[in-house]
Image (cartoon, rainbow, N blue to C red; front, side, top):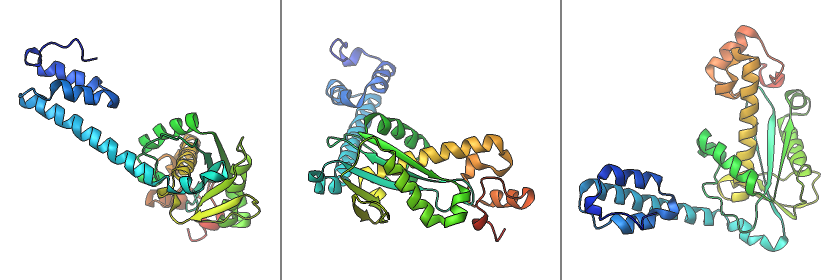
Length: 259
């Protein structure tokens, strides 16, 4: 990429900026090596930006390695599956559970508790997870069933379904905090596991993205409740709409008794 560049003093800063913007993370060291002797302030700024990017990347790699602690501890068991759910608290919509088996040499960066990521980052990671995972599974339990058996039991059912929908049988489960009943596979509940385990974080992300997309589809059918923005949670505008229009078919009756 940089082999045939002219002498740096002959190049316009605008051109060098374009080169920087086009450079992938893997090529940034080469960019720095090529332009680090240029004394123009604009080029110095670009080189410094490149160095900061590489530093941030290294810090992310280190953070991710820490999040592989449980995966390394239990790697001798075989296939490790992370389990997490989203949607226990909303007034409307399903509870969704995700199950993800990542490869042992997983190189996915930026995995984290889905709530700590932007919607854009979650969408990006969703695609990467679905591409690189050994197996993924989703489980969904709707409002009627939630009202029938309560949200905790519905969450367990969603998790059981997510495990059942995996195309590969896991040898051990890393769960976000809970122990799932009626599951014979060994389980390791981890408090705040979605911030401590890459497998649980990945499960959190696919569950969150799946549920958010469902709520956005519901919003197209029932726009008065603002599901695209509130995702079924009890935002003030959602509660106002609930009082004005009454409950929809996806509202949880046991959650809205006070409204």
